Image (cartoon, rainbow over all chains, first blue to last red; front, side, top):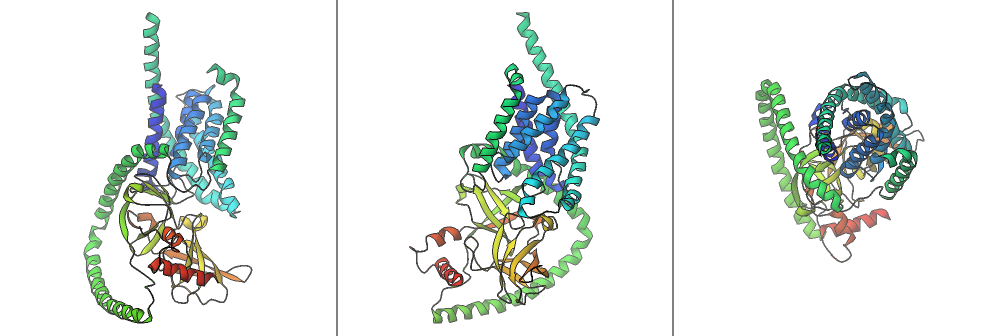
Length: 174
Length: 302
């Protein structure tokens, strides 16, 4: 429960950060997808179930405040959490290469999905243009930012896990 | 946890199916926010408000530090400009008086009435790269409603798509989902100003469906037309940057540079005489400016 509340606060904070402060850090009007970095980090640290739930939470928040329909970003979030949660089993948490690499490819796939379900149907068939001008820069930017986000979530996760362990011990003594 | 592990696939498929159905059913919803939206709005909106004020304060400080040297010369330039504008203003107000008198003689109502407006602040922008929507800090509490138009100093910004209790969602004219019925002020040619994915990040938009024989050219002022259901007529949208003939040779499109700088919007005006609402009620209310517009509109449709 405590974990759920903390992750929800992280997601709310991310939404606020992404829609206000980060707007002043647009590079060539491209903004990093920090929500995806949060989803991927948590999926890596905690596995599929929590990856899916985090993805759902982050997505539904974006749907409510900026979306066109309810469920679109939530679906993308659930899928990203599920797919990256697979890598939870066999990697070392202290290894930063995997989260950064996953954030890069994840953003590429995520934004391509957004393109092929949105702009493509509006008659913008030139995928290459959007790949070079929006998707690739965003993927690079997200990968760089994900180092910080992963580090933060790593510590938060450590802290929660420790307190949970402590609680279990208290109960086992009895 | 065990339950999830056994039925992982099935649960995932179920969730995906539910979300797809939900997304299809709620697409393009634009009305009052649901209670859940409002509760979240109460948490998120004030935080966004603070966060935006703080970051814009820093941004201002940094840019003013950078621009300090230019300020004196800019001040002189502006003073000269103010003088020029004052003179022009006097001339125009004379025209206005004359226009009023002549209109009264002709017994027609003003085509460009003064709209009632209320000020508002932009508190958050879309966190993605595909759309240009933002949130403002007023909602139904302050009498706003969906489909009200927003302007910045002298130019059209967009319209409200959804109203919460203390916040509203705004779709800007650069957003690819937006389309505004527009008119060239000089030639009277009609067209539709639409957002464009490729032009959006350069702060430009596109005016489509212009007649191939129209004499629209670079530098022409584009305003909202009297055909629109949502936008009041006569609001400046921007100026023509480039005119291109379509491949079919029957129509042209123009690249428009909006008179609003969408990278630095902060304070906006909402036109609170909801044009959409009054025009739908105009059969009952007579001789209001908007009903005159609706008559124009039906004349235009014919």
